[in-house]
Image (cartoon, rainbow, N blue to C red):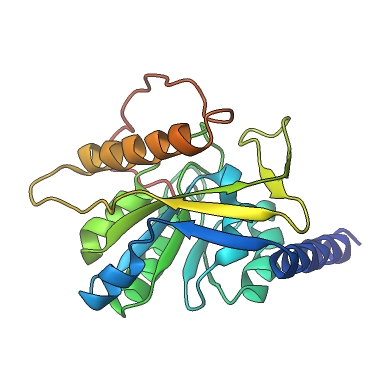
Length: 231
């Protein structure tokens, strides 16, 4: 019974997002993708969990996304498929280890190496909010892909204030503004942690600029220990 209920919830959510996509207008600002495509540079979307639904209003067909093997991951798969996004399953922890996330990362590496974009909600799956995990940096370093940070801000929205990520849902028939930062590129000799921090600084500055009401206060956080990849 629970499996059937989860299936119903997942497909109702997919339908709701599809209806929002059909009724919302998307306006993109400082879009670097045409120049990247012209230069043959692969790229990876870096998005906060709070902006996942809003960013879905303008998703690019052929994109792959890392999805955890948790219940949350199962529920989002139909929504991704409706939008033409390929889900690649994984998790940042499998029996206390990072095996699931590493397996999914390998799938994304293969996808990006084939010249197609990837999408990562970079501060999850459990937060902390706005804390970029190492998966996006590792994917970029291994493929040479540019990281393009994106903040999607609906003109009118519902905010799920009790969730850890303060998930934003656009209201029907509103405009969603998508703001891109300058692409972030890997540097030879730079550590994974140093690169992760550069991506995080760029993304958080972008949110502070374009959605200051929702941008959290900067908090000093310790480095991610070891070489664990959490995506």
